[in-house]
Length: 247
Image (tube, rainbow, N blue to C red; front, top):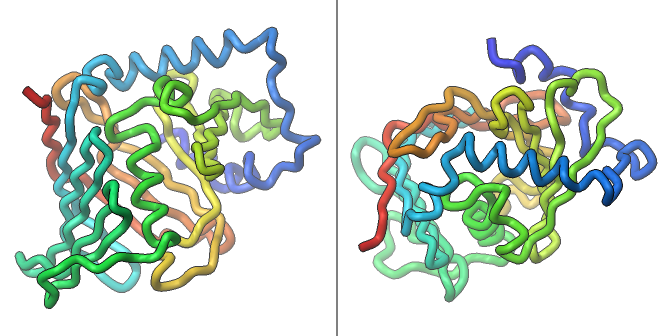
């Protein structure tokens, strides 16, 4: 059983529920610890190969409490992302983000419609965060900031906790397995589907089934959990990955 499954009940009181006094930042004199962790994570993922990609495409199996669909996710290093949702082999919905902002395209429409900033933010944040085209090692050079945190919780022994603050102030906490240097969970405070339900909640994405394709290792299974209720609100499984190196 995966390490995260064993510690999941106790992880619910991890970084996002700690006060500033409880969350002790590592002194500058120990910043080498963060450097070593980022280097290990970069190597474990295959960061050198990842940075050669111009885009990545996934075919997905997406399950939520009220539906199950197929999806296709395309992220481009130039700064755009598109998600197409399929049911019964037909496209039923698309959304994306590019330099003109966020948009959506329902099945019955021929022209994309702009979406709210709140609706576009998760698309942009997903593109900017490590995983698709970047690693944690790239975050500072991309204009974001990182902090290595100490957690007093015994449940997270054998893991490291890294706080990422994106350029617009959005904060994500990453749990890294010290033995593999893989990110096994990330946590944030946001609306899960902002244009449907704008209420923000603590969410945790838990990663499993790490596989290598073209020298790049990614989790092929993700469970999204509402931390207040403990309910699984989303389960995404990769069906295929296409790593595209631009000519």
